[in-house]
Image (cartoon, rainbow, N blue to C red; front, side, top):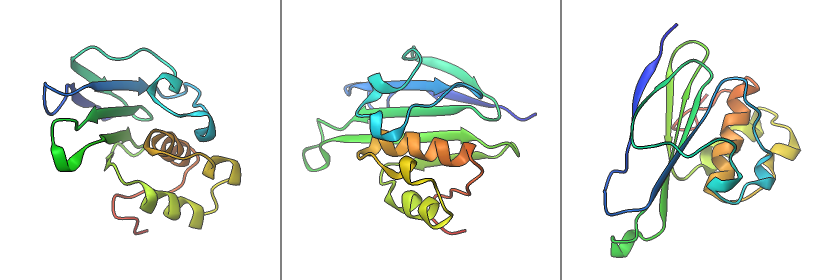
Length: 138
């Protein structure tokens, strides 16, 4: 079994940051019910290191408020796949949504907007055996 040590910390210490891990087997909310990090089950993680095992999902968000042209938030998803590979995705998840839709993702999982809902959608897709890649290519 392959695991990954991940650093739980913002890229810029001046920015607001959050991280949550959904462990293998923990239930996921429906993407349509997710509007922010509070809608994701589990505690917020303390800064430091944590270990991801196959099936674990790390969701992170960091504000970009101090960068005048890049205001808003950046989001990251890390999922340890069953084969031991680490899937890493960064904001702009429309490519992955289209990829999962093409593979036949259930319509109820396609509902919901925003990057946090998209991260949960990707987690559902991976758990349901859909192939998700950074570039959207199969």
